[in-house]
Image (cartoon, rainbow, N blue to C red; front, top):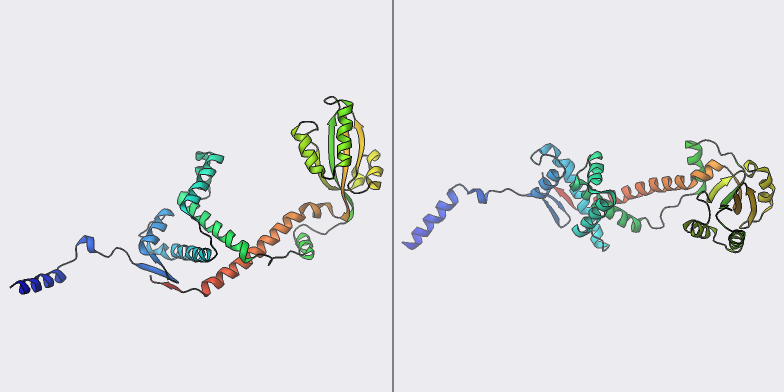
Length: 300
């Protein structure tokens, strides 16, 4: 009787509707190599991103984001890199302290993001930049021809002329004694690192705030009493003092060249722009190869 009773209970169990606790509420939506993305992961990501997790029309968009992140995380692990929750917490705390919590919230809202999305972006950026720094190491070169071609295309023709790169030191003789002014002049004449010296004297409030690197300029645009001294001075030398009212001025000759002022002024920015474009192209190419060489199975 006991055995018959057991058989009855067994068949009764499999024939009855499953309870709510036994309902299948999760499933696999994608497999990336040996890693799984569950339906619950996808819905959580969609909800965190501010969308309706039951709207299947957005599944494809947000599943692609999770797959791409998973690929980055898998590659990062191979290289010994990962982004932890603690790291993101620390970054968020730092941003809130620097900007103020309200301003931080306002900024991300203006970007059309929320806290979840900004942390998701940070995770992606950290992995991309860390992996990219290794993948692209020594692979990107920006040539002078590329810089000039970019300049001509976006700024115009290069008009070359004799140029000089100067640093200016301005002293107010009402603030310092003659001995102090003389000492400053002598230190600049004997010191090869004028930038550090300017920084030191600015911090001590010994020279005027308008002191510093003037960049490249045409010496003909300087005052007539300075032009000849600048043109005949050697690189690295300091000329002066030149007096103008209560001010004493010294000029440090940083460089002499033949070129276009505007080109030299924008050159570094152009280099960064070209470098960024090449980086994006190579990273996209690398990431596509990573996708192509990975096992990706989408199950929805």
